[in-house]
Length: 323
Image (cartoon, rainbow, N blue to C red; front, side):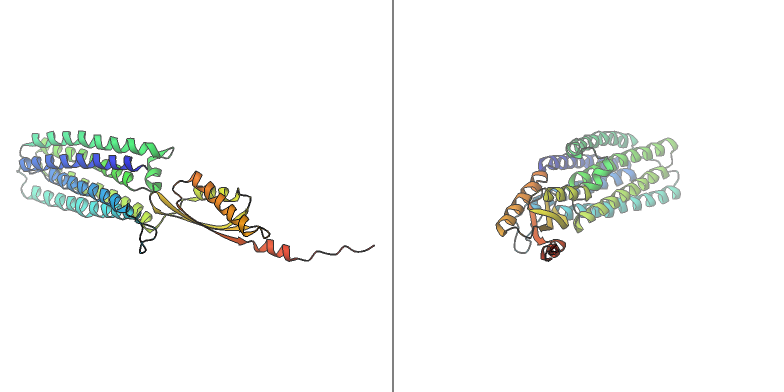
């Protein structure tokens, strides 16, 4: 993912959410709708999340230090994980609580009606339009790098966390707005505010599901993910295409940042090669890997002699029987 594309999607989401949050709180002031309050808190949480993603990108650009010799690329994974936690604790838990509270209030006072519902409808329609713009931007930027993968595969396999996070947040926001609109509509049509609380509970469940998915995926990145079987096979093929490399004994890969991959491999070299020939082979192998994987900035290759080849070389020749 290009830094420009990811930042563009985050900024678009941030601008949309700040505008939407303001409108929702204004509508809540006129309607006292719990769905509007839950959606307002959701938008504030989303705005904070975009701020955290931008902070993570900025901090990840710091130069490496003796204490952090591989740099700070994982900062982006960490802040994406924090976003998932914030989305769950602030967005989901608050919505679930507010929905439960609103339902009990409606049951205790069934004659109470929603005030100024036109405000709620107007703000929700505007919010859906703004959120659709943000979601469209995230989809457009994601399509640049998604390739042939499905959207689910993209979210599962993406090493840069920002676009999957923004995509799921925007999707959750859009569906949440529709749920809030449905809850308010049913409350107005039936005159029963229980529906407003039901809509709020549905928003809380939706946010909890999205937060759990994000937490699982970003936790995996934070712990350390490899390049994957297909990519590792291509790396092995690139190594073994070099004349000085007999075969790859074993290989390990890990993303130490969204655009920085570490490759460590033990390679078998020919027992009669000189040190200079082995060094040239290693340089050629690294060049071939980087041609296919520009993100492979850290490559450590350990040359070794294959034990079977050594045993064969050490065997004395069998004397030919004299006639």
